[in-house]
Image 1 (spheres, rainbow, N blue to C red):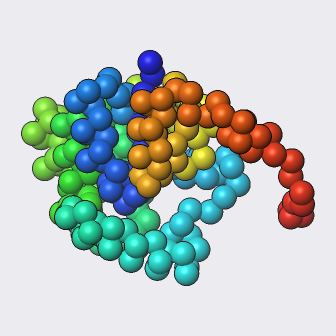
Image 2: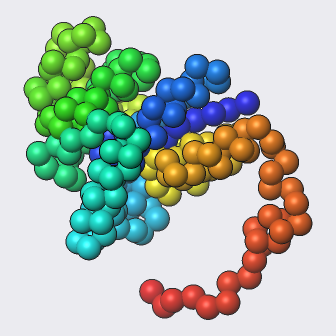
Length: 209
């Protein structure tokens, strides 16, 4: 069984799902797969939530409300969107371990810190065994791994973050986590007649580009 979590540290929705992913990782082998969300958006020809002014305001309020309802700390960093390349590369350089991903997420979304340069991540990198984050994040192999991660996500059909993949079935968004867990328990979830019918439902009208 393959369980992959595609995420970008730029997404507060990924931070909201993260505790559930950590819990899942205690019972299942979960591959943590950092990707560049901007490249996914470019591929599918879509704007991110923070690029639509009214949606940006709603999304920020909704995320903060959800965090408070869940009792989960959340403090937005000084600017958002921010450039997530440094944090993504640090995760890869640190082996994409639970500890590394947790530390980076916490730095950005629990503490509300800047994370768009290697220097701003120095205090996160050091406990992860990376004494020189500038060199680690500039490593061509680290950069290549992030490109490959993102290309693999696009090839798998990922169109947003966070996305949990279970044997190739994609569950987009933290609010789909319970849906994903239902599928994990019952692989026949999509086999009834109505589930099959909507999969091939004809398109009645399409907007012109």
